[in-house]
Length: 517
Image (cartoon, rainbow, N blue to C red; front, side, top):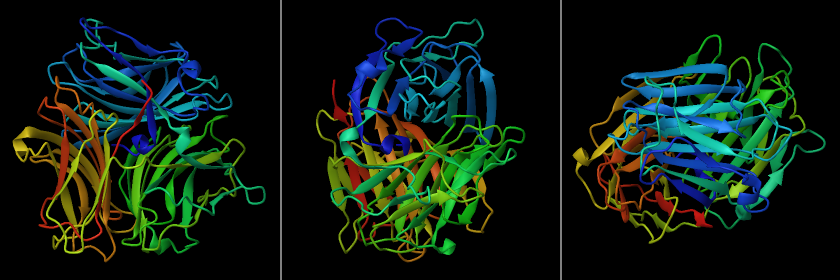
């Protein structure tokens, strides 16, 4: 899965194209459709289009087709990782959609604070046209109105001018489950920064949704780094991380550096367009464990006129202590956060299946998928006995061990020299769906990844897989592809790629969404 979809979810509505192709899919009267108190929306797309090549789907909010949209794209296809942006367009872009002959692809779109009326509407997406192309988008609608409707349609600017959703396409609306909200924080009255001094004791993973605008006021730098201090640790060298993303309007640039820095993401700042806030989703898996360094992963986006970035970052605190205190503040020029900024901490859903590797290590881990589950996702924190610093994470669905039955693309940033890095993308030849650490890595360093198997129970399509994983220092990687089977997924098996055993304390979980349909 993406970190965006690691938030606790409740399925609210679903639309399937049946019989003949159709053009528009719209969720309308949203405030009445979702549970009272809902703030954030996630749309899951598992779809194909009638045009014969991959294209984006269009995003239209509240029926507005005027030139009020902007987007940042980060993409990986062939052997190239690229980024670009467009502004003042009459539709926005969502996730990649494959042609119907290839199968059903797509991904996730997160709309944070969809119903506020003091914010430009920013969203992030992660998806893939199966194994052909991976993408991340940051979309912005220059309007502060509450979102009343979301329309998705296949990209219409194609030769012949006709492109429709293929029969069988399914688009699902989820609400972030506010019943699992642990705490909201506003900037404190004195410092106007954020501190969580008490964390829940009844969850395995903590997910923070941040909506931030820094006080840094410089027209040539309209954003600011978001810094974290975990358990009052102020030493930058204790926070190794890797970032992979795209930024720059005048000079587009792929970001792939390794840092030793307290950063966790990026926000807008005072000189950004009015009412624009940066959105970060940060996951701290196994935050109460004392078995390994504390890993984290973020995905973030911020609409402004200089950088307009969309990125993911993965790192760790070099300490095995359980997290007990979280502190966040501007890291580059800002002194505090402006009004409207907020951080919400959510507890992950209780696991549908969970396994912790025993002291002697284990060669594989198999988790059973519960009957009737929706929104199937997995969380992995793991290390292998491979002698190298990193190892691959293999997945087998329903016990299928044949590499030929999986088609997966990877895009990654890697390197361990400060402020440097490189990137790559390729179509893999096996069933690798993540990257973890090996025994050659620093003691206590475990890899961390999240995985989604979209529409896992369907029996008329190959299974679309999305994941985001990292070694919490030397590499961060996105994956998108498919399992070439129409069988419903009933079990998920994980194995190390080069190693023969997972290390003691490695954790594997399945989580599923609540269902209001």
